[in-house]
Image 1 (cartoon, rainbow, N blue to C red):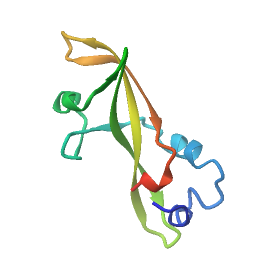
Image 2: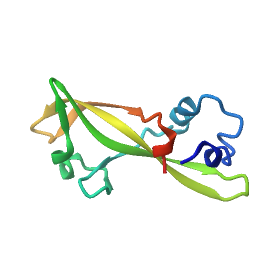
Image 3: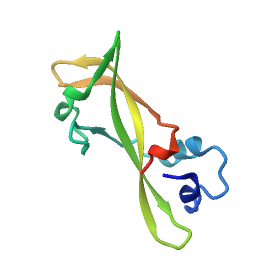
Length: 111
């Protein structure tokens, strides 16, 4: 997404810290993991083959979804790519005990 297009949403018109504003708009911290076919899912077990490992750090790509109000009055959805950091796999629960994410600051990759 181009910055000019993003500035057409009321939430970003006068905003200088766009990534910071995006974090604030992600109030529910709800995110999806990206499967190998590019589709989002809430179940990490569907995309375990997408987990990247760099030493002890495990990451997976995903996205958060925010609703923004366009200057012309309609509401639109923006998907913001994120990197999710995974820690401590729980074999019994079949999930990670600790997850956190960072927003991709390259606005051109937002859609």
